[in-house]
Length: 505
Image (cartoon, rainbow, N blue to C red; front, side, top):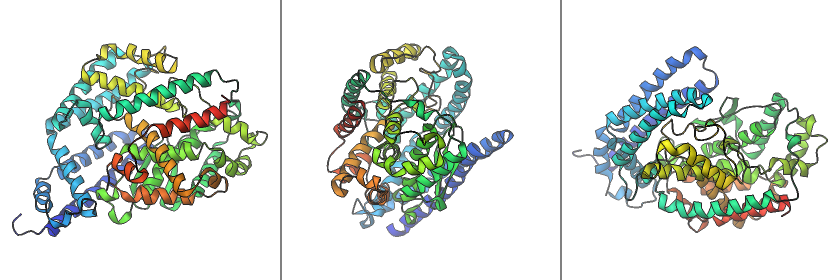
């Protein structure tokens, strides 16, 4: 770019990035609307809208001028400090540009078509336990995903190229020993709890909880926790999610069951954790990496922190119990301690999304181990259903009589999201380690929650995590905040301490 200064090139890149972000925000809004209010007959048109936008965004992401502008900026004084706003943005723009341009258009189109077909086939095949009908399209998705990994490149194994898209810098070699330690400690805890003399009475959670009361209670709780309802909203959907449209517009969704307390409340608190991260990003950096969440694992750490470490603590409920009894007549004859034990029940189950705090990570590790074996060629998809059940029997002591609740239960593989699952357990690991560091700096947190003091902890996470945007990759961020690398002992000690006490073992 003859005659262009590094500052001018940087400003072009920043403007291009922000324009793409605004276009992407239209797509996010359309996705939210599709899940909430789009009439059934409007879905085909919405798919065409989204397809057109995706094509436009891909063209912008692979614009050759990006590479030319990056070449002008890189190596200049503007990016001499690797932690400066400019250096971080340039680093991440380069990373994104290289990833986007490494994937041939032919492969991107084929994978998009295969996953669109795969999700449709999965939705029809799962209720029928039709693995044979689903397997051909799944084999194609895995084959194309291997091509994507090869196109992106990797040092040791294909899985790393896929995982890196969701958790920058993470590798299977890093995760395997951490997950092995967590798995063994979790299985030991589970076996211990199964022999416990005390068991919770979960019937108190299956009384009548009117939807209107659930919504009113949830909104009051999330507002007190720090979620700004003037910069967000809460709606009902079939499958809960959080959608960040942009600064001042972060949307939460949940689903209600009037005969079961947990799904709506803890689903809302979980999505609120994601939403607090969205509201905590610095608005002045919107549309650039410095104004973006760094990874799915760090994102999940925020949702799991608020759902479990905060929302399932006794201190939290000591503060909110009078409000809960005010909203729900069904809880007025229930002891707080009995309710708290019930919401922390540990019970091995087949369904990942319904798993409790102890067993959840075992569901993730099973999927991680199977994905690794499939990509390494150590396991065939033909044998995946039995391999799935074998691991469930080994880790959780149960197995699924149906494929729908076994190897076919998750949408991820049909959607091409291979390498995504580990981020869920990474979120739990990060959460425990961050939380312990917060307590070192702020003092014991549960007594603060009991007094309704949630702001100090939220402000700590804002300063240490949210405001950092993508300045640091996940493991580097963790080290900067806590002073050490990923250490599974924090989560292990938390789980053993909490649940051995609850169950009296």
